[in-house]
Image 1 (cartoon, rainbow, N blue to C red):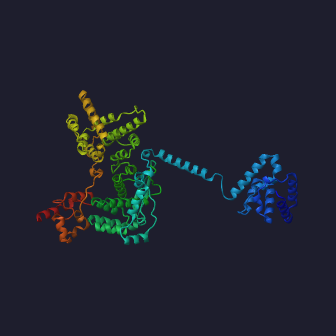
Image 2: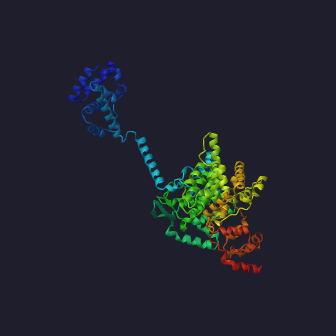
Length: 625
């Protein structure tokens, strides 16, 4: 240290009042240890306040004599802007540190603890706390999955639940964001001005991504917890009593087939579920698939906002029974949303929605079991499909169902191809050819339907179908026949892949060869089929085959004209519309005789149409003609 700086420090200490004891200690320490420039922080000389030196000396003395608790109490009394000077302390404690090196280390740690505690900081605050919270959350999820075992294979991955996320993985974020921005822009300047006035941040949901121009949720529906039984919570949707008249208005409008009245309901109550689903069907058969998908997503958004705090698709402890009328719109909206995702090519998202739909009600009222294997194959979830077939609890073994018997063979075929390329051994499981052979022996009539529906035009199929086993195959019970029709309608597109056609052909030829040697095997499989599907009535008649089709018939606007007015207003239609629509359009919408089959089919999808009420009206019209 230079002589000038040393004289300046000594003058400041002489001018400042000091405690005699502290001064004696400082004099002894300075005489015993000569000053060294390397041991002193030169930046400490920038602080030349008179009171600071006294506070520093006092703090150094107290840190040597006070206990840890007293130090903590003393540091908390200090101002928050006080900065500790550890270098000066270490110099003043040099004698004691030579005698006992551990005492210096412990006192430094205590001083650091006091400072951190004064600043409300804990050692390793983020890592320890975050690790504990993640561990607790992980244990909670594992406990829920262990407690509710049936839903372990139906566990939903929220990352794949939204179609937008899958679209981003396929096409990239820039393409999807550009499309979403164009979709969210209103079509006219008037709508833009209105959107600016009501723009808000919509509520975040896990099923859909609501755009900013949607109105806030009106809280017109809620979800109640009915009971807890066998570890499962049973829920039911309930409408707000203050708007019970809205449901009455909707019932009256659908009884009159008046879509204008339903549109008026949506104008005032934009989140009425049944009205949104009605217009979703109307848009779908009009060819406006994007508008139909928007209406379905809007319905799902409202129904998700009403979820009970204990209801979550990420846990398997819930049941939402379909037999409650207020729960039915949620099932219908999820099923339509699943089909819309499949139409957009988001097969993985459709699989997650299908798993959610199947877990809602163990009775499977919408037939999710008949399409979940299709989405698993399209999204290449082959291992999961085999695990699902083994673990899912059902009345019959899933491999006996037509869709699973063939889909498991296809999944094993692709797994064999992947494992062969990787050099792995898979000899412990049945081969894809054996599984396909079993499927054809169990359901031989499927081969003829696939050849016709796909279609498969190779001449070899004609020779195969001429065989007695395939040519004389019968559907069996009504339930099995209905299941086969659903399978062919849903899965026929899979058989357009050449590698699967070769697999099917190889298995069919092996079946023919084995039956030439021993015909008793066919009788054994017939007994298995009869025992598994022994019901004399169609247990799946509530499932329409058309609901599982990937094609949707569209109708021209004039075909939908009768639905836009009430039955008593048809005579007020303009003559031009009457000529364009034809004389049959003058009849009431519920008439059947002489009607366009496409219009009758559309009416049959509406749950409030009853053809039996107006047979006499139709007869009267026919007589008048």
